[in-house]
Length: 171
Image 1 (cartoon, one colour):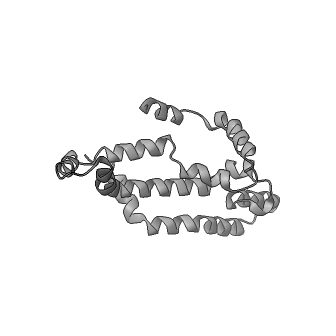
Image 2: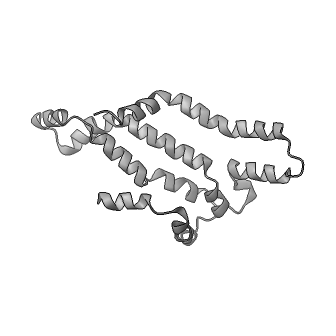
Image 3: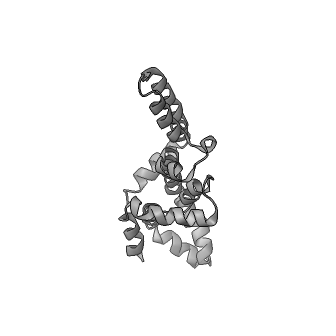
């Protein structure tokens, strides 16, 4: 089972590109934001592996003490394991948000309507329209504005992000 999840990490994006497009087109979601947002909400192989490794660090003594007190397995997971995994879930959410925000290929493939295009596509259009006479001051200002929400997101969740990264390495 772990091998199946790890194997998804080795699949290159071009291998999954056409089947994913066919799936979203069959569901009628091409030219919507659903194919861009929905995959980020479900765990990929890396996120599943990261969360599993983090949850394995939950002290067994704490879970055994809860079992002695009569707690069910679901209660142990809900009251002990999940709250201790909050930093890891926050790190996964930040990674998923940054990956979705910076995605260039997905919007390029799934969105045909120019009014629905993302900022990464808009930056490329801005750069290609001004290709003859690149105004670097405008390009840097636009790049800063595209980057600003990610910086704000990081500073809002900096405490969880750093604790999730550092606690993952300690036993």
